[in-house]
Image (cartoon, rainbow, N blue to C red; front, side, top):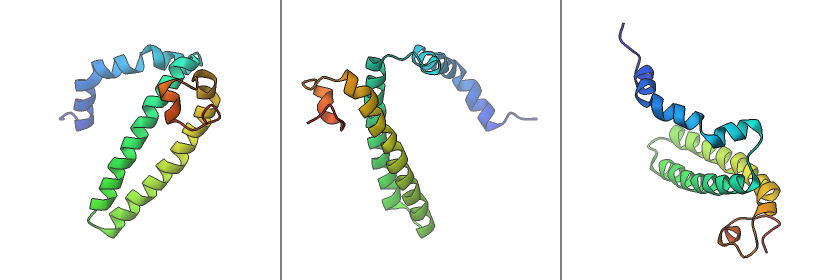
Length: 116
């Protein structure tokens, strides 16, 4: 019996997958031991990804060829922009307010109590 496509992909990416899931950040995250400074840098990167992802989804919505597809993309955009962004706002307040300094260049890019 031939190997399934997903099994082929998994085998081809096994080394990268193992490095990713065994990374220090992942281990510390599961152990609850990520420092505020490291978590702040992660949140900045992840929020930037979310921003770019919403741009991509907007382009997909704008170019969808059916009403059903536009509805599906629109609902997904709504979910990502509400729930995901609410997570970031809470995280910025909890972690980044303790870590970021007013005159730090990255601190001006994010909302929260540490920012004027």
